[in-house]
Image (cartoon, rainbow, N blue to C red; front, side, top):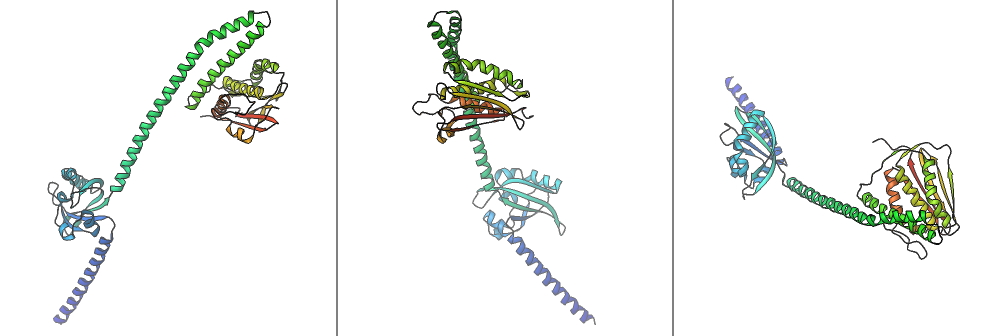
Amino acid sequence: MEIDELKDELVKLKQCNYTLKKERLKYRELFNWANDAILLFKFSNTNDPIIITEANTAACKHFGYKYEELIGKTNLDIDSQETALRGPEIVSNLVAKGHEVLEIAHRNKNGESIPVEINHKLIYLGGDTMIISVIRDITIRKKNEQELKESLEREKQLRETLENEISQRITFTRALVHELKTPLTSMLATSELLSKNLAEEPNLSYMKCLYAGIQDLNLRIDELLDIARGEVGLLRLECEPLNIYELLKDIDEIMNPVFESNSQKLTISIQNPLPVVVADYKRLKQVILNLLDNAAKYTPWGGNISLTAGINHNNLEVEVKDNGKGMSPEEIGALFHLYSRSHKKGTPSGLGIGLALSKMIIDLHEGEITVKSKVGEGSAFTFSIPLRPKAK
C-alpha cells in the first residue's frame, strides 16, 4: 500500500515538474518576444553593484552580447561612465520609492553610448530582492529632440535678425520722413500764408495750386510712414464714438475744391438716422479721402462721383462710386497690394500706397473693403466696419 502511494506521488511530482517546465518555457518565450530589452538584477545593498541574472533576446541585441556573456555582468559593465557614477544614487532612489522611470545612458559591447529610458521596479523572488528593468532605446527620440532644439534656436536667431531689420527699417523710415518733413513744414506754412494774402491773379491761383501740391505731398509722406508701420504690425487705432455726419461734412469741405477744379460732381447720400459708430476718426477719414481722391483721378473731366453711407447688418457701410475708366479683372486683382498700380497709358502714375493703406486700416477695424468695376463703366469701392469693435 505504501509503495502504491509513493508511485502515485511520484507520478504527480513528474506531472508538476512537466507543467512547471512547460509554464517556464512559455514565459521564457514571452520574455524573449518583448520588443524592449528586459534585465533582471540581483540586489544586495545600495553600495554594491547589482548583478544581471536574467536577460531577454532584445537585451542581448541592445548590448551586443551573447546571452552567456551578459549573465553575471553588473550595472558597472553596461552603464556609461556618467551613469555608473550615479549608480548608488539611482539604486538608493529605487529602494526608497520601489519604482522609478528615468533616462540614463548605457554602454554596449563596442563601447558606444546609447541613450535609454528605463522603467525599473524592486521585486521579491524566492526570498531574494531583485530589480527588473525594462529598457527602451531612445536614440531616435533624442536625435529628434536635438534637431528640434537646433531648429528652435535657428528660428530664434532668424526672428531676432528679422526684428532687428524691422527696427532698422522703421528707424530709417522715420528718419526719412523727418528729413522730408523739415523743409516741407516751412514750405507749407509759407505757401499757406501767401495764398491768403495774395490778391492778384494769376499769382493767387498759382500759389493755391502750389499750396495744394505741398499739402498732397505732406499727406503722401504721412502715408509712407503709416505703410511702414502697417507692414510690421505697428499701426494702431484710437477708436472713439464718432458722428458720421460730421466726418462726411469735413471730408466734403476738403474734397470739394478738387472736384470743382475737375468740373466733377460729388453726390453724398447718408442714411437717416445713422447711429454713432465707434471707430478711429482720423483713420476712417483717411480711407474715405483716399477713395474719393482715387475716384477724382480716374474719373474724366465733368464726371460724376457718389458717396453713400448707411447701416447693413450692424455694420457701417460706405460706398464710393464713379463713372470713370473702370478696371479689368487683372487690375482689380492687383488692388490693395503695396506698390501695385495700373501702368496703362493714360492712367495716373503712383505706387498704390493709398489703397493698400486703406485696406490695412479697414482690416484693423475688423472690416472688409471690396471693389466692383468694369472697363468703361466706372468703379465702386465699398467698405464695411462693425458699429462697435468686438471686445478683446
